[in-house]
Length: 185
View (cartoon, rainbow, N blue to C red):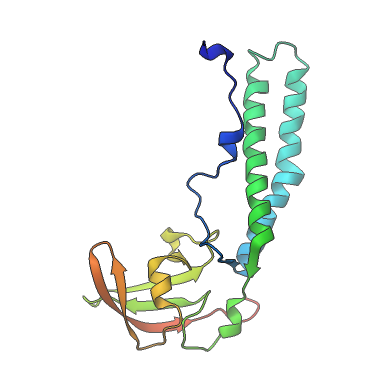
């Protein structure tokens, strides 16, 4: 059969390939700020971006032959991308468990939302913030609460020496400092 007569399905588009999965039975913990960012993105897609693309697609469809109409074809593709992102954000927000890290302000124990400074065996210090899967950004020193380093650090206290399993082997790390944002920050 000629490729010209095969239909591309949207079923493959629905699979969120490359997105971090939640642990089985786990919750999707997220900070209030992270929840607000995801919700703002969802509302922006629904209220602003999607209507604009629908308008362009409608205009392009009224121009006649759709098979060679770039505005129509690219508009439909962008619409599928927007709808896929809307579905993803809606699902994530539905299962989100908002956890405010400021309730632990002043604590020396590591919980979700903590900013932790630790030293490895060679004495090199690293500071990370433990956040939700959907809000962590490794380039900014933020790690997901399900990452190996976060799982190792959770429930530890300042001064604890822990064993972190890495691809290079087991490494000892020491918790030097734990901090949380103040309430309302």
